[in-house]
Image: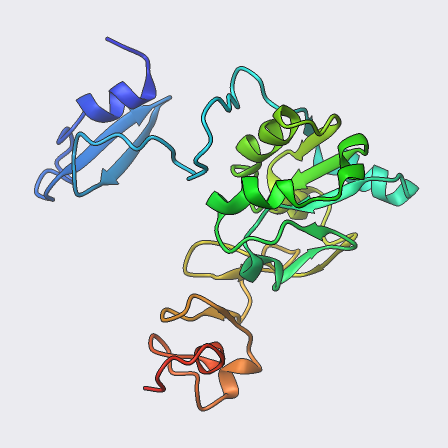
Length: 231
């Protein structure tokens, strides 16, 4: 039987009583772990898990060097010249980032290649450490940058969350946006009171939640700014 995880996902469907009654559920055993997958098309394979839109990026065969969290802290403690490149979406950056980081300036990751083209030309000869929430996006972002001429690009191994785990909040300000019910974690990896608006997807701080425009699940002050109807 093939060891390709994608083939495993396709072949091992409806193998567990727990999900047997759920339409189009799949149970996958990869490296000893059970993964329950739910999709509208049971045999559809996504071309990209993280949408990027550029062919030829090979994170496995041609990865960018990984920089451990403790090593990055040492660099920053020493004041070593380095460009900290935040590859996340703007609303994530607004919640917190590394001190003096350069935000790539995108609303979605698919726009990353166009944003890279707008970076200063001198960055191509400077050491760059790319980072994101948990390192997944940088698996593609960093190799892409090396492919288009940035000579010295690293990816922060494990992303911000691994940095928090191993180092804490040194050289970082604010929280880290996460894509689950917690919305944001502080450097102690504790959930904060920050929420996300379901209507416009903006991050809503505790102070903003005091606004009459904040109706959980319906609207927030950011909806007002972009002209959404107040519910």
